[in-house]
Image 1 (cartoon, rainbow, N blue to C red):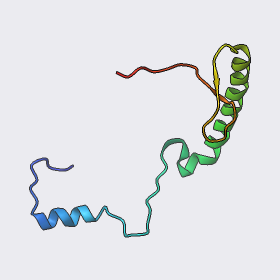
Image 2: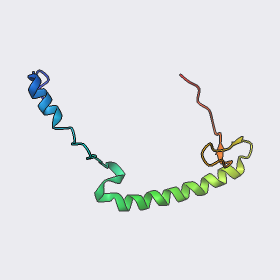
Image 3: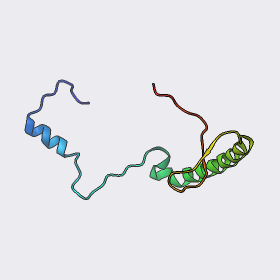
Image 4: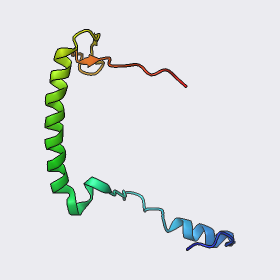
Length: 90
């Protein structure tokens, strides 16, 4: 446990801080939760199954609700954007 009253000299603080800085060209990548190495394959299969179920229900929902306005996507220019709600600031 770190002592909250610990006072370090400037050089020691910089030394400890630089222990956490990666050399140029190296990138730190960490995966937590469902993308952790030990359970990634099993979890991704579960996620894909869940997304297939969600896509099927989403298609049914969009077919039933044709009253929502349709806008074109600014990237692909396809009429796929559908406003389902707006958020006001604050």
